[in-house]
Image 1 (cartoon, rainbow, N blue to C red):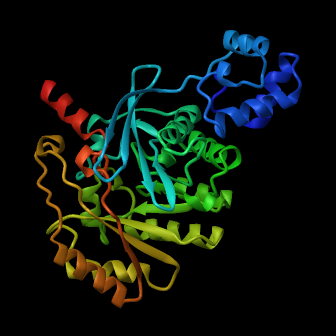
Image 2 (image 1 turned 180 degrees about the vertical axis):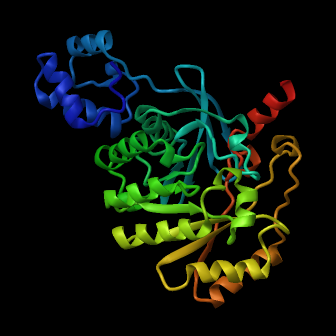
Image 3 (image 1 turned 90 degrees about the vertical axis):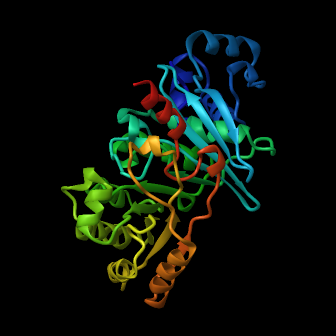
Length: 351
């Protein structure tokens, strides 16, 4: 039985079923989620006999780290190989005052955003709660500080988190209850899955919701995100407002800025109108270039700094709170929209 992905209560039940006292389950939870043990034999206070019986009957199947790619800025992309051979990526992002981890929720992605390399291989499967929680635990082992858990989690890796709702929610509770990560420091990013946004709002957790908008009008958004044809910008904003009204949490609109595509002044003014009068903010993300072959001929360019500044100024002049994503890990294809880019290029080249 796989014990990674079980919470303390579930681990207590497993140990009691083996005739052990409940506190043994609590010890194992501490070893897994706070002390980052990779095996039962590393759990030194269990005793040799119990460790041996656990090894015989159960497992801690962490994904294997196939490769590590470390950026000049200190971020590290981990290419993880899962038990069935699927591969996903997670990014370890150290900052002076925090340790963030960007995690994947699916192998592949079905959203097919035109400017993003991640979805090129299509959707393959959902990740289990164990495969999701393994990512921050493995990233924690990359830290220079022993037994330091990440302080911030962003579900901005491969996949659409709200299309793997139950496993993502289970992983979130493990991050909070077992690893001690504050709910306010966990961000769930969605392309705008309306039912999932409402369902998450009704959980009334203090999560941060980030909505990938990328365009202020339906025509352009449908071109950039072909799978969004049945969803309007108005509906997405209404779902975001519902999230804020239900949870009291401010929503972030993620806006990948594409040179000459969605960086015009009239588009900034239209976006400002969508954001006026309620607590949200816009996170501008200048597009991170990926190899042309990866996007199958799509012609996108990074925006000019002057265009980004003008766009930001218009929003701020309208009273909208704006942040701009600091690019991390682009030199190792670990930045936003680049995950699995190099693998996708190889797959296209050999197809």
